Length: 363
View (cartoon, rainbow, N blue to C red):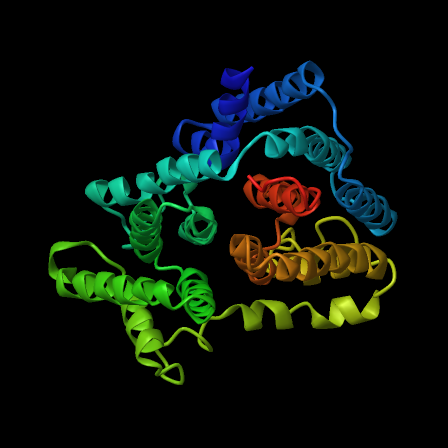
């Protein structure tokens, strides 16, 4: 059963269906996606069942049901995505329940190590992503791994692993990674003075990176952006905070959202199916704009609940708070919430661990 567990976890954490779809082709990519869900179903039926994560199920049911009332472009895609989401919530929660923090960290380390090896192959855009194809998505995994490492009691292992996640994250040149890394590191340093060393390591890595830019094929625009963010010069045109930011993507859809706040505009209406509009790049606005206020309130309730519960456990398990903050911020910059299986999986993992009885030792 462990082999099946590791098999499914590898597919989720390494985003193998997406990787194979791009690198090998559509046939293999689609087949690998079906294989992942078959393995998920097998794992679920072969294991002892636990209580389903009803808030996530209700979120999916209300989103897909209400969004279909107004508009559905392709009913086959709609139905398949809905089935996959429900199956992933039900079966993926069992995988999350049986995945402890160390196992998840090890899988994340293997995944983000592919970003570092990607440097050896070079990149047309000077940004690296390894298995994850999209550098921004790769940055998401790096900050999740970095935050999760605060659960490790072995200080040397924690610092080493966080260093790997930091280096890989910097190589993605993700603005979101850099900003979240600073926020999480500062919060952790305020909580425990010994965590100030992470700030030193992070800035050392940036200095080394800046000093060897001549030998690496790096994205010079993003490199300049990082320099400005780190130096505090976020008002600079090269900071990346205002120029080409997500704010412009959000603004395109404000009128559509305000016109249909109750039932929304329909399935995928804000997800880039319009040839003119490229998608809202915001999960909050996507859910509100496509399915209206009711699924939106459930969505907000789920993650506010995680945030408040994690605050109560900050002394013993600060990683829950850090991961909750990371997820809440990440949802601001992408709109494929219901098919982003790694972020869904992390959401399940936090929920399950936060709901464990107080007398039970946290994993």
